[in-house]
Image (cartoon, rainbow, N blue to C red; front, side, top):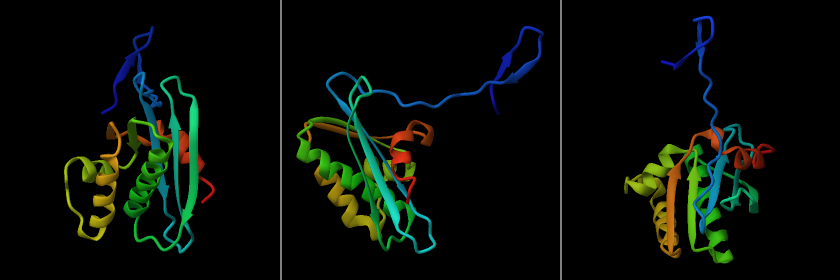
Length: 153
């Protein structure tokens, strides 16, 4: 049920909630990742964007993947690629934000999915290379820059 907002004349109208990107705390950077898969045999796409606490874009990337099995696989590959790249840049406190709740749950809750076990294990080991790293969920509306980065796939 949507929240209602009272107007001057006593009528109510739906309150529009605007989802927007939230910056990381000072001393941290935030990486938004995203993946897309058409399912028609065309390449899948992955993308990520790394920003500072004031929203400045530091780095971003997008690439195509061939022969993916599912959207989940593409989302996991987007996260893994972002982690691998950011490790090379030597950032130590990183928030990884995904619009895939399934990915976040697989990483944080030690859930298993046998066909993706090697990728999940790789991601978890890579995350240990940072001084501090967390993986959190964010709705698609907060992930616009990463989403736009892969829109051409």
